[in-house]
Amino acid sequence: MESERKDAVVVVGGGVIGLTTAVVLAERGRRVRVWTRDPAERTTSAVAGALWWPYAIEPAALARGWALRSLDLYEELAARPELTGVRLVEGVMGEADPDGAEAWARARVPGLRASTDAEYTGTGMWARLPLIDMSTHLPWLRERFLAAGGSIETRTVSDLSEVEAPVVVNCTGLGARALVPDPSVRPVRGQLVVVENPGIRTWLVSETSGETSYFFPQPGRLLLGGTADEDDWSLEPDPAVAEAIVRRCAALRPEIAGARVLEHRVGLRPARDAVRLERELLADGRVLVHNYGHGGAGVTVAWGCAEEAAGLVSGDVPPGG
Image 1: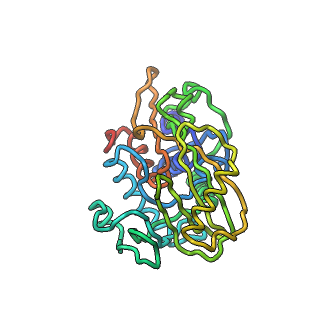
Image 2: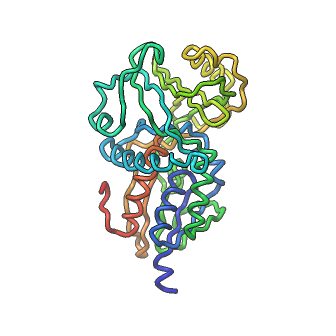
Image 3: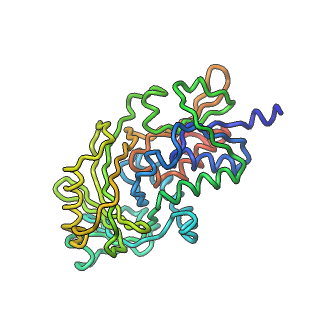
């Protein structure tokens, strides 16, 4: 019983970072419970368009390593897309030049090339990347965690000291702002429009005139975006913003203009100047590992950060290791 107690871990937070971290810990033999205020389907992660790419995340060098490790795993999971929600999909990163891409991308992402005029009007980079359907992936993560012996409890935590476990892993995302407290964590609001897919099979990200537009084909629907409004806490969809998103995407693919709107989504990305992934020894001897502040790249780095967090739990990986 005593050794079992020492093995006990509570992961606070049930989004993609918390669930992935819990999976890695449980599959390494830890006795893990996830405490989450909301089910995975109601977390910010559920709103994500979820194209794999290191987007707006620091420190860049560490994030690149976490992302590449995650890429390894997403490529494996893409062999079972109906189960995992992960597919490898072709698309264009607008305003990007493969010749100017960083060496890590040219070395690791197969088949990077310049887009053709038919694929994109302007300079673009064609790539085949993981695109994750979060409505499938999050429940799959949850089931994988439960199958590894983990448990999930619906609990609202107002102070990390409330969590009675030898090891606590803080994966609370934007909640860390009040919970730690860490005022450097701030929201970056993203709004999406979900429409019926008019037959589009490739993704596209384009940035013109300071605005980012994208569309991601997911099973049975097309996700259109987007926005990145810093320090905006509103979870209410703005009709004018939605109209602008559809208009910008239709300028890229005219068939989008007539697509029936299915849903409006808003999510608050948990941004921070740098991801906080570190181990803290509390005064009572317990271990607290922080894993938050991933902004809009949580899905992209989830597995790499989870493995490093698990190493920090065991005390055998230095920060950034």
